[in-house]
Length: 89
Image (tube, rainbow, N blue to C red; front, side, top):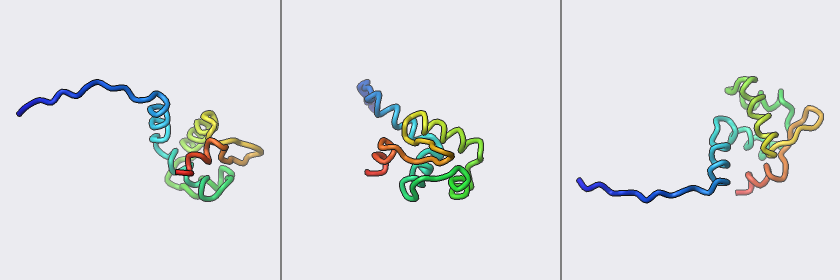
């Protein structure tokens, strides 16, 4: 059997970061809930995704907020413009 050599290549750093972030367990589903249902309080979001623990949900919401995908105002999470752009595909 003949070995095929694959050339080295590099992914775009922005693409790589986005894929690693969105590929993290629960992030895609959390974003989908916001795209479909709009702004959410934590308790309402937790009811819509009962499979995820509260601890993990808090962690993911913090990450999404830090990345500028979500904003938090008065105990209400909502998508930012950056977050809405993810749902436009």
